[in-house]
Length: 356
Image (tube, rainbow, N blue to C red; front, side, top):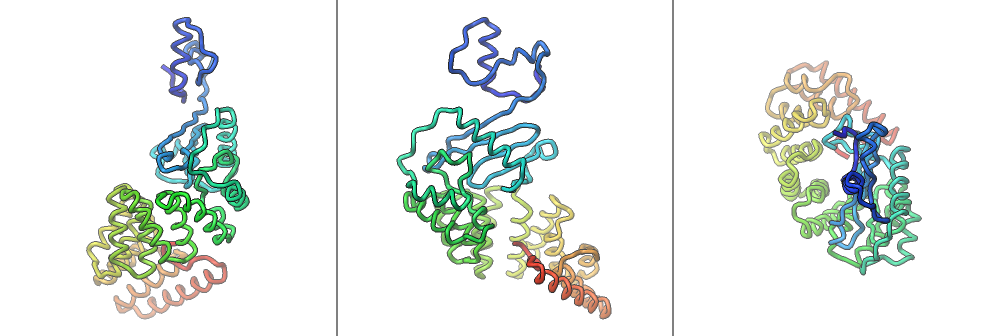
């Protein structure tokens, strides 16, 4: 038995060597026989690719797994530490991370060795590709494909949202119903604060792929910002229906929407569900505490919110809870602390509270 990480492409070379058959000149994979006789024991680097996105006119998703880590190159890249997160639940991707960059290079080197695929009929012009590369969208692993949808966050981080949007809209001109591109533009508009436009793009993305939990979540965010609470509720519930194990962030936002709709029981259910997954999640604790304050359970609300918190919103809720208990001194102290934290957040450029 081989305990190390190996590849399915290694099976055929292994069988050929064991039966003494000649190996074809062009054959992926390497024989596992060295593992059988103990001359090799380390794990092998595994590369993966899926062609499913080609159905939508975009490049395939690519991945590399090595050293207990897994990197997925996609319009929304993912990076996981498999030893501590075997279920791949916490995406640790950061474009500037040295390990991420190393894995990107591994993919680029691997692809350079492979035969280049025939270009898609729906390709982006060279000029547009150059613009997207200049914006930081297409790294070494993407440079060979004219069908990639770039990752918007890189340009957004540089404050070049307008240029990023323009590049993606050129991509959309080739395929107005591309769910991937619609999702990317919708996310850009969301981060830029153009919530109505974001909701429009994300609604179109969901029409193309109704069960896309990510598009539904972002649409819920955008609609909540516009004040369309019923629309936000529908989108967020759809996101949870498509992905029951969705992030705590989805449940927290849905709980906040229910709070604004005055549905305390539904809000409490969502916050409690989030805390079952992440017991220390501050946003979920604040949300549940708000429900408890509204329901007159002031002591329960205080127990949820730590005094050492750095959240202005947490201290605002603590002030309300103290006031409900008739503790005027403690309430005033909590209010002053909330004001201090808000002032500090404004001075540093950090968000004061809530989901961002």
